[in-house]
Image (cartoon, rainbow, N blue to C red; front, side, top):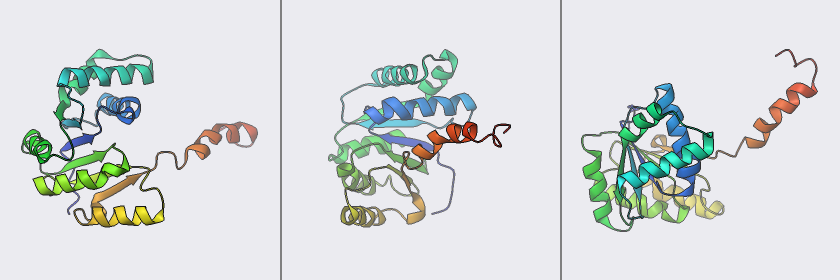
Length: 192
């Protein structure tokens, strides 16, 4: 796959805890910095409508940041779309294909339990929404080495390795948290 810029973000698990606490605040920051102007399509099982998703996003941002710039949030809200449906139902992916419109290079972000990865990837393939796309997966990636290898095989049936991004946002957490302590505990680093 060529490294085309993604033209849409598809967020599986858009009504979940990860999206509420982490992803929507991060998207808000991206909009504020001017680095996000592409549509964001939330996909989830919950029978919500777009206004409810927008309210959930606002709540997550206010909770995480303690406040909100209404102009920035209005820009983010204008990018949001919502597809409700069961990941095991092909009709959900047909609705997603319609919502994608002319998008050629979506980024599918999996903020869903690992048990749903295979189901979602198969739905993407069967609906044709995996072509030209990238896949981003949050940890945990399997529950042991064998299940991680099995998940890799499943993903590689649909996506090339260079189109798959695996994220472990806690991998360097302890080291990052200790940076300030390290800086101030070492007088030769204090001027930095």
